[in-house]
Image (cartoon, rainbow, N blue to C red; front, side):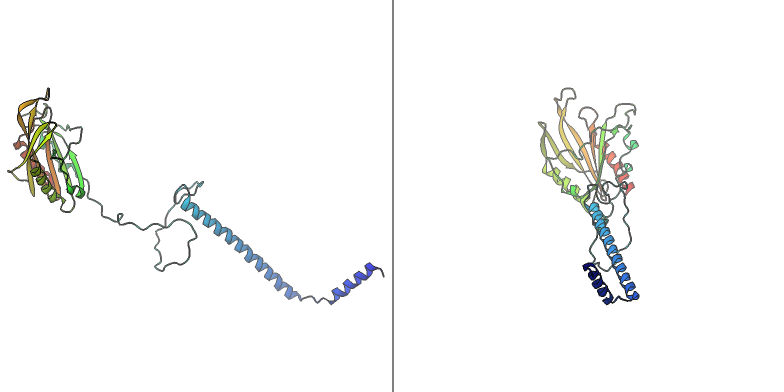
Length: 300
C-alpha cells in the first residue's frame, strides 16, 4: 500500500467515527443563525437611522439657514404642531428634530395698547376756518421753559400732533390765514395726565424769565376760563421783531398757550404766525380751547 493509499484509509476511519447531529438539530441551528443575521441587520439599520436623525437635528439647530431650514433643501418651510404635551415629565433624551417651541414671554401676553389717537379728537376745519394747509415741520409740544424736562414722559401711551392753518372771523377763506394752531394730544397711563399738568405749572413758575436768541422772554400762568377736568393757560411775552430785518419794533408780543386735561388725555394748543411773529389774541385761543374740550370729550 502506498503512502497516499494509507492516508486515504486513515481519513475514512476518522469519518466513520464522527457522529452527525440529527436533521431537526441542523434546522434549529440554521434558524438561529438566520435570526442572528436578521437582528444584526436591523441593528445596523437602526444605527444608520439614528445617526441620520442626529445629523438632521444638528443641521436644524446649527445650520446657517436658521431653525427649520436644512441647507440645500428645496422646502424651506415647516409647521409646528400645536398638540398638548403630557403632564408627566419625560426622561428620554432628545434625539434631534425640530427645536421645541419656546414658552410665550410675559411681553407677548401683555394687553394690546389702545388704538392711535383719532383725527376726530383734534380741532376740525370748521373750528379753525381752515383750508387744510399745515406746517411742514413738527413743532414742539410746549414753548421752551428754561429747558424743563417732564418725568411723566415715561407714562406716555400715545402722542400725536397736527398743525393746520386758521383764520379769524371776517378773514376771507380765500385769503391768507392768520397762522397755524399746533395741537398735540397725549394719552397717558396711570395718573400721568394729572401729573403732567402739575409739572407744567411747576416749570412755568420756575422759569419767569429766560433768554432766547438774545431776547428776554417772560412766562406766567394766568387765571380765567377753565376747560375739561382741569386746565391752565400760559402767557408768554417777548419782543416784537420786524419781519423784514428781524430788528426789535419796540413793543411786546403776547402768546397764550392753553393746556387742557380730559380724563387721561391732555391737549396743548400752541399758535404760530403765518408771517412775522404775531400771535392770536387770548379770546381766539380760549375759543379754540373750548372747541378742543368738546372734541376730546366726544372720543372718550
